[in-house]
Length: 463
Image (cartoon, rainbow, N blue to C red):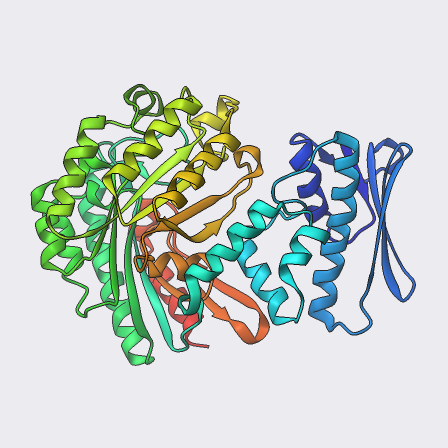
């Protein structure tokens, strides 16, 4: 499938076509295209999408819109026009309609702020299903005032780019700690320097750090002593302190003692699946028994617990996934995130051209089961290359929302990020934009050029 468009934002249009034809291409030659979208302007913007004898048309009046709103409306109506054509051409719809963005909750809130009926806009114009529209409404309700931006504040992210093994679905730049052993302590030393410098900078600039999040990779692939060194740098009591332990086989009493001593309140124990054969296939080096054992150990300290599952893993049938959901709910963790498998470039599964099946049914089952057991959806994000054009949803028990997750997913919190591949973000609400400063992706460059990246981060927040 080849697409031609004279529209000035062709990537957005191409993303809609790829929902239906993943291998579609853009072309500069209208004579060899299968589908075309043309934009014209005569007081209003008019979009005509065509394929053979099939046509769809949308027109939008921008007379009362400012420059930024005009850009949004042009993109929105162009995407709707091509989506209408695709649904007629293929005889099917998508659960998120013409939406291809990462954060549909942000769009809903923006529409509401502009005085629109966002639910009606989602279903009647954008083609979003009633089910997904209700999911957004439920998330906004659960977030409440927690999604409100706090000026003069930021969250602190600390990245640990090591894992004990590489999962087949993973595209992160983390490395196996056994192969990078000689770089681990130098990395910890460099990271300590960046954390201390960042906290000094925040204090000097009057930036209040709300939440601290250790992510990765797998932070608990480090030793208890190395974790202790890093956590010694946190010289204040954050509102929320989370460690994304992730792998059950990286948790032990010594590491949990360190976390408890430093005031950590939330720890992840991520099974991904409760089926041993699937764990083996995806490259996890732990057993199902480890999940139960380490969960009980973590809860014995009184930590809140996050658990993750992935719908669409290789060899995992619908019935097997339902078992994973049921076992997770039986344990009653404070947060459960249900991810939809995304085949990203750099992952082994992407290279193998793996295709998941029954994912929609899996996601539907998880939502029904979690709702029925009192879990509330509180954040959602989408990615490219997700199975069945679905989503990742975080669920929580009442009052157990992860503040860091809301801040970063809804882009309402500045992020001061430390570590390899960590990205600091400064939100500028008045201009509706975000500026970023990224650290080196690989461990060696991060260690060698740490000072350069720290300076760039400080420049970002010193404007």
